Image (cartoon, helix red, strand yellow):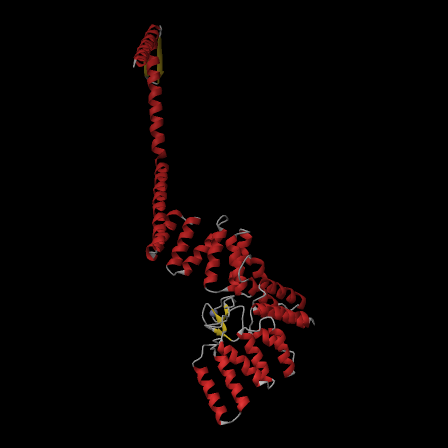
Length: 427
Ligand SMILES: [Zn+2]
């Protein structure tokens, strides 16, 4: 307060001093413009000059304000538009989160109109289009995104998702390659490419991209089957077997390549090992395939099951081989033990009917025993079988990919025997 008072006092003194100095300047000024002559004292002339300067400054300022008005107006309109656009974007996000398709699409188009083709608005238009089932709108927005330098990957990602959804695998592969070039090394893209490799049955690439996938064994078996070069097929099959030596298709894949390469002993050893881990009918069929002599087949079957002789699958194999060789007593012995252990599957009942037929022939007691066995078969437990865990379709043989639903690694050996203690073998 005090300082202010002193300042005003000093300013007053200064003005009075200047006025007094001006007033003391002697002389006068005469100005003639045409017929007019202005004559005044010097102090008044100086004051008039000062006043004229002030007037000119004011006029200039007003003129600048008037000329700059349209620009200021445009700025205001732009700010207003941006604010409106931002609020619209928020409304789109809320509508997307709430699953309100109509609102999301309408507001997204409005945001695009207000804010132009920015990556944000294009992405919102695309997502709103997808939510509303308008894939054409979404595709248009994704394509516009791919033309923007920084947002190219976003556009490609959207197009890739669309191609995958409509199962257009060749198109998806092309887009995935473009996306990889636009933004290399993405984990998401790697997973997508792995999935594409599975869908296009490019097993070698699936193995390269899949990383630690529990279905690797399946990929290796499938890659071996698809590989025309025998040494490379053997290498894939060996990998499959190493991954899971208890998985029958893996053991058979490896053993059959060994057999084809003339290494029958190693092939048999591989099958014997697999039988020890998890007996399976396909392993038995493979082990006996090259043996034409029926009695020799019985011996081969005995060698195969030696390490796991009490397993129901071992008893069944022995019984069938014995029956084929005419050794009905041995066959009956094995089936009866399995029966005593609670085995109630259909295949055992049918085998017993065959044994009865072969042993007793067309006699009264034979017909009765056969009828009895067949009756039991009708109400027996289902036999184990290959089945897709995704669509539940049964398959006669194992496949890496279910041809009904397209799932990979879902065909599994299902054994519903209640008492057999057989493990369910994962596919
Ligand atoms: Zn399926």
